[in-house]
Image (cartoon, rainbow, N blue to C red; front, side, top):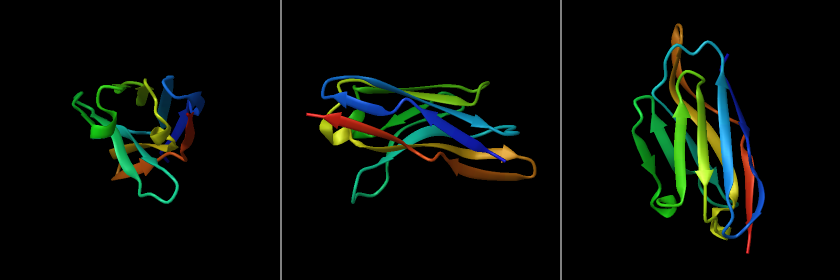
Length: 120
């Protein structure tokens, strides 16, 4: 069974930084990508950043230049360095792994989420 454990959320002032980490456990033989989504109150969940197992990254326009995603395929771990945080970055951040192959199935999985609060 695949589980994702997130850490690194918290409260920070505007302009500050946080680093989120997410580790996937389970017998994962391969995967397509790992990444982060976020959901603010009364808003839909949205993509923040994602990195494929080949190293290709994709960012939401709202975080480009401020956030950096990185990953360690061997450790099935993904990181999100968040700099120059703004109050509008406040949300629950969810880690995801897509196309995780654990014989005989392939599926996407989500973490439970970690709260990020940016005060003005």
